[in-house]
Length: 206
Image (cartoon, rainbow, N blue to C red; front, side, top):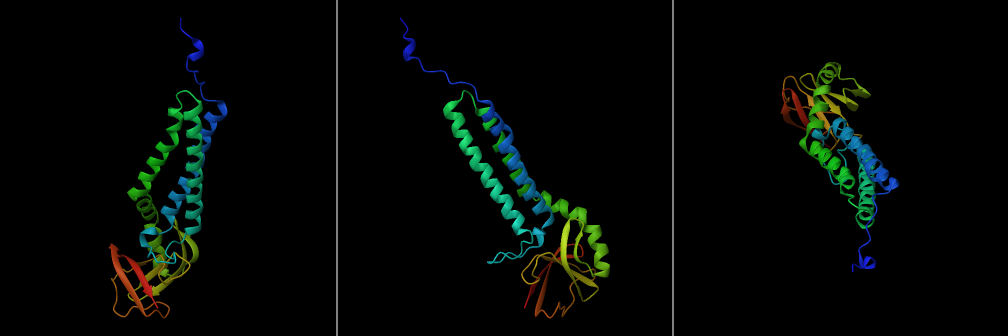
């Protein structure tokens, strides 16, 4: 005769609180963090940043760090909930898979460079207009927040996106190309690296 006492206990279906936390809470937290990272990528001028050992070159570093902390919190929450689901519940995999799928899609989007490209396309016309006067300070031009602008030789204009001009995120509009002996605010050397059309990555040293 079959001994029911020796049969493996059938695990219950996922509890409502676990379903909500796994299928809604963690994905929303991860999506919030991802939106922060996407916005940072879109607006920070990462394309123009010169990365240095002290972290300069990232004008939206605080936002990026906050978003990364949220990503870590979402990942930790997902791991705990996934372990609980695997141990306690029957067939938890569909809900466990939601957060990783969202993470994969958003990571692919970030690494593809699409946010950088989109930010530039949305801003190029406004930046050209601002370069004509080159007097903008502490204002948003397109999606970029510009700390200062610096006129340079040949009717050029340097856009400063980070708090520090030197070794920061800078780019320039140079309709006549780089001019010999170009100087900015007493800098010893300004190096222009062509990016596209009249736009240049700009590296300034003292």
